[in-house]
Length: 337
Image (cartoon, rainbow, N blue to C red):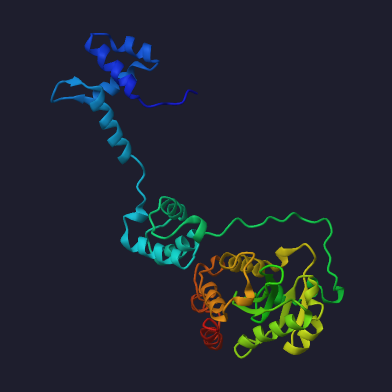
């Protein structure tokens, strides 16, 4: 099928010259390689009633003006409340999907995340650029033929069913994030049910330092939520897991090797942290206040799994299947520093 092309200025000049000479529309169309109806519409659409003739330059100016106004209007830019809501979300590093999902749960007028992407790429939000406010493409993992853990007596397959189905609080996933060689590490832990994140800096990943970091991380939440289990990967920094169990009164389990999806919540959160602290960041010089502000930003980020509600407290209220103690607990948890 032949693709359609608009009239060019040269074609319009040929049309004007030969139409004024009395040539028929069919002959002009045959020379231009166009349908006679196309030439007829061009004359009718751009005919000057005032001067009672067809002028090529005037027709081309009308064409350019119509092209500027024919594109689909982005209703995001026409609704001031929607625009301000979106801009505020982008400044908090929310993804367009999260912004649209959150808006649609609170308003009757629908907002598409693709509209937000188009507006950002068109420069409609000052200071917002795709490469500064959107997450980079995630790594892809291929399925391994054989998965196992080096700690057979603490395998994830022996983890309690309540931890697997996220039916209780206190089941954590943990990991380490490195800045660069010799530039410090972060120890992260996320509660599987609430998706609450805690993070602590450490100078290196020797066993005593890592164990102390987990102790400090759980100390931040232990008054509100009792850690019950901790699921880790097979990194050598976790060889002292027995001490972690004793110091924090919990049970440690290990995911299969080459199986990051078994700790999906933690891997996803680590990706969010990497957005703020890319590889090469020197964690040794990172102020704890800056780390706490990033953790708070992530903990207040709406989650698709929580029906686009930012705070677990709101999710609890919407479900009506939590008791008063749960509500009080998370009102404190969400503001942990």
